[in-house]
Structures are given as structure tokens and as C-alpha cells.
Length: 130
Image (cartoon, rainbow, N blue to C red; front, side, top):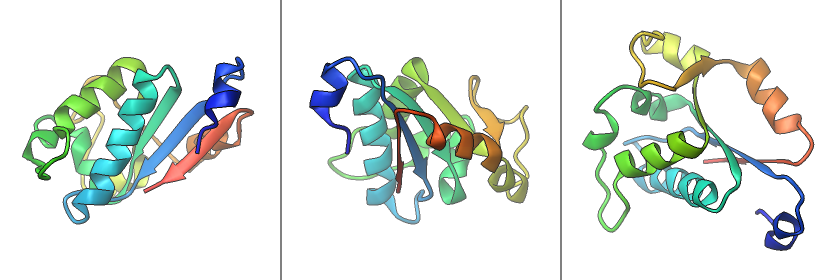
């Protein structure tokens, strides 16, 4: 959990969220996107990693297919995260689903474990996995 006191005291924080769930676990998926969007709206540097079944949300139109009662629409959450942070699709997850760079939403990068480890090990980084 991000310490509001530490953040407001001027300590730079980066929140790296790895979401492994998609339509197969909608509440967990929605929670990850919601936390990322709230962090981005709060001025926290955000990096959202799409892995496992969430990899499909890197494709145009796929977030619109996601439904969860009483949850913010996934396309809106994704747009706010993209506007304020970085969205990354796991290299292996993309390959297993035959997703290439030309297939993903504009601004979504495809990167692997080396980049993920680099992000989570940086000073001031906090990692969450959903």
C-alpha cells in the first residue's frame, strides 16, 4: 500500500501493477484497473502490466467486452491509465496469444521480464500483483 504521508512529503513513488486476471476473474481484474486508475488520478507514476488473461485488453475493443456490475467501465479505466502512465503487455503472454505490436492499442508496449524486474527494483517503486 502506498503511504499517503510518504507520497505527500515529496518522496517519488512509482506503482507497478501486474494484472494476471481477465474475464476469468472479473473482480480481481477490475480491482487492478481501478487501483491503477485511482493512483494515476492521484498523481502517482503508474505502470500497468497486462499478463495472463488480461493480455487481451491490449487489443482494440476488448476492454469494452468486459462487464462487471457496479464497477467502472474498463475502457474508461484503461484510458485514464494510458493518459497518465504506461501500459505494458507481457512478451510471452502476447506470443502465446499470437498478439504482435501491430495488433495492440496505440501506446501499449510489449516488454518482458527484464523490464518488469527493472521497474519493480527501482528506488521508490511499489509492486502489486492481482
